[in-house]
Length: 144
Image 1 (cartoon, helix red, strand yellow):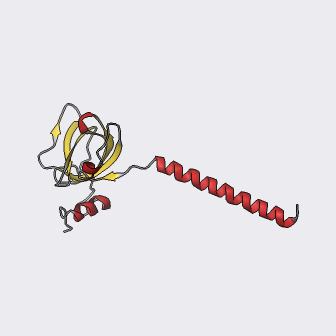
Image 2 (tube, rainbow, N blue to C red; image 1 turned 90 degrees about the horizontal axis):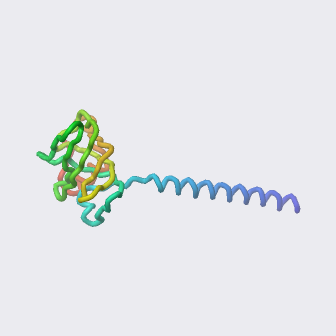
Image 3 (tube, rainbow, N blue to C red; image 1 turned 180 degrees about the vertical axis):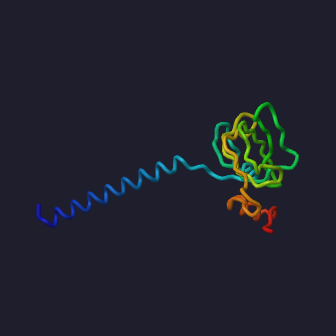
């Protein structure tokens, strides 16, 4: 084997190793993806019980119902469709009606989202970009 062939073999092996590492990285990242949905998106792609999603929108006015302990039931809306959410932990301090919110969790029976994370906007000027863009597209939310 000549020196030129050895160099080509080393370069080829290095490229193969990098390609394998990149493929494994993208596969691992794809497994951790949590897709973002607005309530109206669930009309076209209905969620199956056990599906894990990230849902964004506004807390519907008059929908907050406190249960036993820390259990809270509320609705997330984009003013076209509404999704009922059940959360059994302490809510963020800024959580309230008509507030921008992002909820993560899995769907249970009867299409109710069983949330394990609730994120509320942190000040008067902030709303998650994805939520704001979707609400602006529908003409529901305008910047002040």
